[in-house]
Image (cartoon, rainbow over all chains, first blue to last red; front, side, top):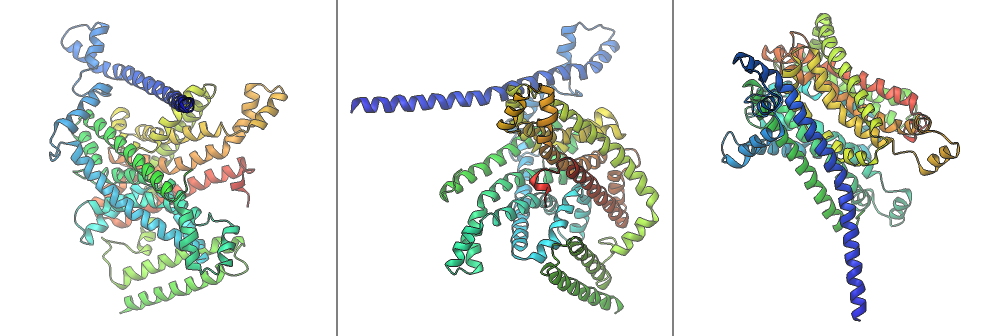
Length: 311
Length: 284
């Protein structure tokens, strides 16, 4: 009895250590590449900011030693390429140090972008799913719609962005949230459409035949076989879709003279020559994208486990 | 009154076209090439007719939504400007950036090919970066490389690099154990295995990346122009014409963008058909 529990314990320990070693083996290369990127970034910031440092020194009639040069390139006010620590100082300053309600808080601007992303995502996913259902149900719809859906994605969405804003303004829709949401929906509906069409068609001949022997109606087959069968495909495309929706929102903020949102921070940082602000907004967008994809991934695991479809 | 008649005619045309499509899609000829092209074309034409009918029927102001006929007229009248913008944005900005970015991504993928350690590090990071809104980097690059097409090409390089890199690295892992073993029994060297087995096997993946990159390239080149450009280019024209409410010109530019995007995508897809003809997705 005692021995049995002993082996069980070591077995678990063994498994745990295998797991952590495997995890380490996965994390190590990523960390190494990240470290290489940081080193390159620092080197690049020295190289790109050196010109300004030399010009300043010459004006002051001084000559710079190498260590002075490096020190100067790492602490300029308006560097061409801000080194990582300056970007993160700005990121820290504009998220943690500022009040959330402040117009200078990245949390506030991030929220503006996030809410437009969610609206666009909801719209895009609904359109994508509806079109997929239509395409699976009607051959006419499939033949007429599918080529245009593909063509719609080859049209650069930014060309349409100013157009959508003019249109929604003249239709009496106030605010910038709606056009942004439409642009982000435009980018995110396509992966959902493709994934969902594939998913609704994933049940094979045998399963369809089985339902036929049950005398199931078309609607029942759809609800009990096709719909559940499409869920794994749906989640895979939702992950692509939410990243695309965020890209769409930021793109929607860029050319439109928006004053709120991460894209607007980039725009304003450009107009006022504040590179740190641009970089901080870029990183905030990256963090947001990572968080959103992770969130969808977590929901996917949860739902699939609930449905008994774990991979 | 005539406008309303036009609207009814347009609706009638749409109904007839839809009925014809239903017949065609369910007929015995639905696999025929002509039908497979004809149905979506008819659908598109019907929507254009409906659009024309609604705009003329309800008397929609051209400042809100110009009719397709007005857009076509503007297009025909200003081909010279459109060509100038096209060559500035697409040929100089997007295409050169696409080629440089694809080349760099391909070279990087080959460079890390012999190091599984670097690949394992690069793949997750590349996948993550490929999902980011990299377009945001546009103002920084315009600042670095100036207003002309070089900065647009730089934005395009940054945007297309990661999708192509990730797909190429993934594709180079596609050759099966058996196939690799066969190459070894032939005593094939590393370059020979790469050239004769692994690169061809990677082609469907590489083209997957290239296809995604075609759209990104145009987006990048146009967005970069919003942050400063010489007085030509599609992004420049669109933003100035929107300001002047010259919406017919904006739609003409959108038409050019749509055509350029579709042709670009189509060219890559055609090349894929030639190169990766053996892949199941290419067989019919």
